[in-house]
Image (tube, rainbow, N blue to C red; front, top):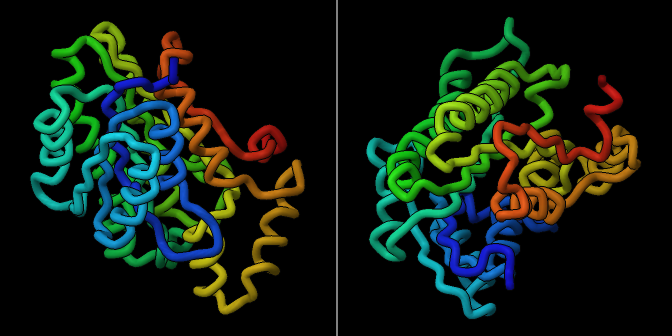
Length: 264
């Protein structure tokens, strides 16, 4: 039997930017589909989410696209309602949202940039959890996985991103503890240096450097001497969403090729 056979899974951030590789959200949606999930695919980019829909539709799974900005008023409730109205339940919520454009060290950080990063990375994740919990409590079952970052625990020059993702880690543990008795698990995946369009293509373009050279510099920072791929993040997310992780909650799992182990 497939690991998510028949499970209703909401993947927030299921689209991706254009780039040479696949992004975390799309890869996760595909892995969930390969394991038999029924999907609600959420993204603010209609073209991107339709591309993900096309990819999973080839596998014959049921999938519903939802184009919405999860920072908008009422958006998290719409996301959860889409799952319940179409499929009758909600088994898995995968929160894959994150931005960092314009981030700087604290003394150089603009307040509007700080507010936007926290709004997307932390507040939207909290609001999505808040919207999902009543349905999962009623079912006495559910799994939430928040995509954080090793930036939450590692030294970095970018202040708002680190603070927002550290908040996601704290939120994850709090949701886990306060909902464990209701059959709800909540964990986080902390990607390290992953070869994705937003991590490499967009960053290299913003810096005005060659993509391959930038990717090589990132790989050199990893003890395993390579970047991870979105499939690494997707596979970790699949494990945490599945019953194989039935006794795991409140965990913040680095997927980083050993970077945090080296930091200590």
